[in-house]
Length: 195
Image 1: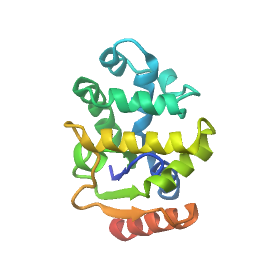
Image 2: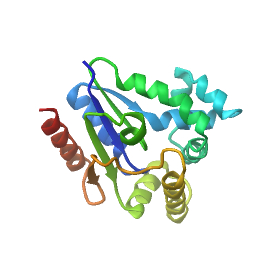
Image 3: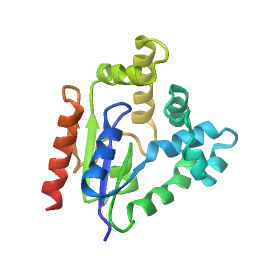
Image 4: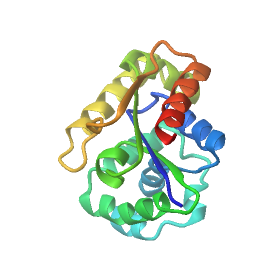
């Protein structure tokens, strides 16, 4: 039986951490869809061909969490042909037996609009920049904050599948929450909705 949890939100809001914890808690498969875009962006060459020919090795690159990979992902994600090439992969993953958790920016609105549970994880730009700065240890805080704001503008302003909460998503603002509290709230929502 398939069961889909769609978790969306901007960069460094905590959706990846929450998604991994939720998947482990409920025994569901997990897909960080941002890694798909990061891998396409870092692969180089024609991004459409890269999206159509992603390999497990591409998704295992150690540099996919870097600032450069995040910027590359945001740039290729605005290409409609790249998005189309990755949609089928994501939808197939979401339908797997045993259920799945997918996290990204358009899971609840585009990839899996019929997902049983939708969460939109967010936090202030300043809090997200602090988290990202601590995670990557590159540049200055001001540079990271500027990148977070620029990425938000690109992700929310793109014509194809802009970042926004699904109408039926539960909003989870993690600005003032510990990781444990954010995970607990997400698990409580899922447990209640799942019955």
